[in-house]
Figure 1 (spheres, rainbow, N blue to C red):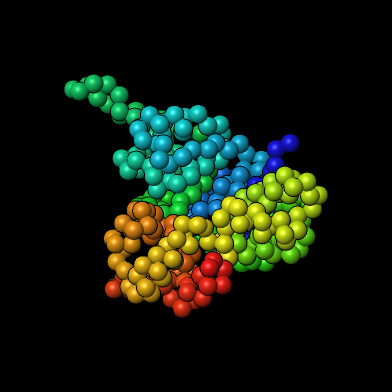
Figure 2 (cartoon, helix red, strand yellow):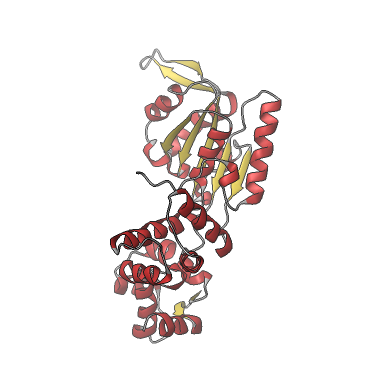
Length: 315
């Protein structure tokens, strides 16, 4: 039986209260006015629920949803195929919309604002513009890189919602609900332990719950307990606060090789064998949140908190 971790109704969605309330108001207003829902943009870190919210909007309004990936919309024909294939009042969800080919943005502006697309037909010397009217639709878009979106594109959305990281109590509720939906038996201590390792992210919490459940099934244990959670985390390389093996190696490099002094990003990158963008976007954010490292004009350095962390949870 397939396990289900993505929720499909507002009542089951945990956290992001202001966004949920605003969406309910927008949907209710649109229904009372018998008009299409305004275009919506969600942004925030991966795994916070942007895709789930798009699906919930479609479910709550009983609309069909069509999925697309921004980076795959490369040619004019890609966008035309997407927009011409929809039915009246469909929800289109474009994930990572910042990855859309910038040459397509003007086409998208017209589609969002006026519900039409201008097509150039004919050959050189005999070209003309044909305006194609689109069926009514709502675009729900998501991005993890809000700064890469142009202002004209942002301005075409009727509502822009920023999803924030979750606290451990919210993550614990998500784990409990996911366990219940999937018939996974787990005690409160285990829920708290998984929550504290989930980096304030529902997707990571659900993935960890799945992996821990795998170990429980393998060990033929009917209930997940703290011993199983810790055993699973040890094998899959998950440390306190949800740090990964790569982040631990990064901390150890700053501590042991740079001897708690500053190191340049270029030098650190050559030692840990990760490119600079991976370090900046994937490795460092959580370390900065928990103040395990510091960044200054002199470079990166492990903090006292970082040294204490290594001594307590790694060495």
